[in-house]
Length: 188
Image 1 (cartoon, rainbow, N blue to C red):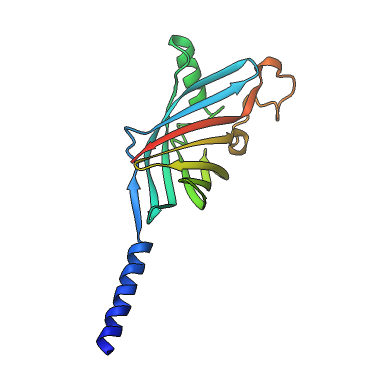
Image 2 (cartoon, rainbow, N blue to C red):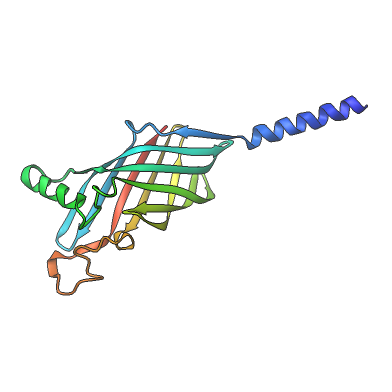
């Protein structure tokens, strides 16, 4: 009888360990993409930016964590060509915007995750841009080997105030909206 109890406790411990085991899935940065959209009074610009590395953590089949590093030096405008593209790319990389010389990466670290059902989760994460960290909340949908999300980021929280109507008067049609959009597709 004593052996039976020992075996039963061992099996329960093993089952508990297996069901609570965490799995980290590295993101395939070559197959993943981040598309950005920045809007202004007179229109918008769009482009891409590359992931340097990232991973999602699962507990069983449920999302339990994540962390990502973005290569800020890869900012690329896709809606312009030639000199105008070069000018905007350079300006976005300058201190007026993301200051990539001093801040070549941005980081996102999941802090809390709420399961909404149907493989959709609400995540609150710490987002670090230009050495400043602020919380951001977004939904992420996880499929078998991919995940998608849309983040809305207020750039002024990261001391990116260039052209912001929240900080400067009389900008007129040169006003750039504070929020920018990131559409993320992850492959792992």
